[in-house]
Image (cartoon, rainbow, N blue to C red; front, top):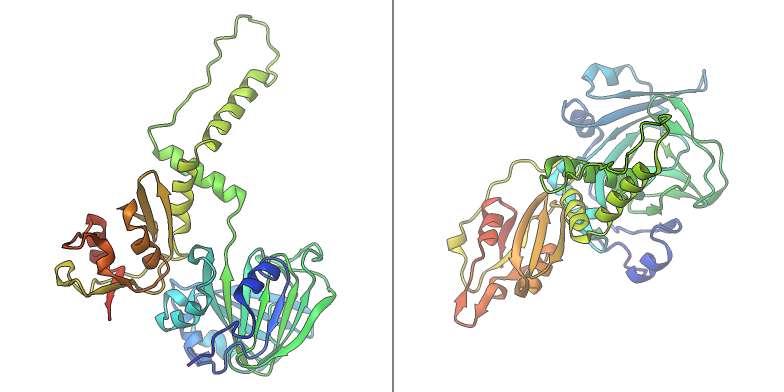
Length: 380
């Protein structure tokens, strides 16, 4: 159905020269682009309590932006005009599994970097105003056309709050100034100003990639330490031998805090475990899954594959492979690294790769757990 994105550019070249560095335009990235959702269907999603959505309008008479958060009601849309508004629905990939085929084209970027797929419907002149994000995003044009202006990375002006939750910025100088037609795509790196305006009615797809930040790491570490019984070193002030004090923060206390943080930073296995467990969780988690086959129905000629839409990351820990899927950990012996690499890369994995010897097929306990959780499927 698609032509492959990046078919006219080497992926290595894109990653080396554009990814996280500078914006890039891809004309006809998709030769045909199916309409996953109509405007009415997208509006229908925004009526649901569990789905994040926003309605952004621009009042031309008062030169004023406004934003409302969903869930909405049907009558909310009947009072809107024919221009200058847009509806944005987040995490559509969690609710419309057909969109996974679109995301599969970006498999050259680690799955743990993926945040969500946002779909937006806009009337003529609709948009969210000039802004920049703190994440990487691919902007794919579906139905209709949009005019996009993209600035120079690192040249974004200071954001200014217009209304609660909607941050915009002042005018910027564009290095890309184009109209996107169906199938065209823009890549915009973090902290890069951009502004899209719909030319007539249009539907756009935004494939966003999250970037872990320091405060998130500190929060994860604190949550882990709070639940762990292995860490609980208390401050020791045996040095105190004088009643004289003026309640000043003491150097010994600061040095104790530094020592504790340094000790944690020097435990890469701990940091790896915390990061992988967190980064293997998709934004909203998964809907309940059903396993479609029994572990005993696997034969020597079978092949298995992870289902699409999962968030996966793995790491080595001594003689074991820790495969993290949706926040769960599955443990395999190191000799299975070829099999686990194929699974983690969403490739078909011949069951023969789990053989310990030519005459036996060993089913590790956590392979059975993967099957029982519904994370894998049988493929030809």
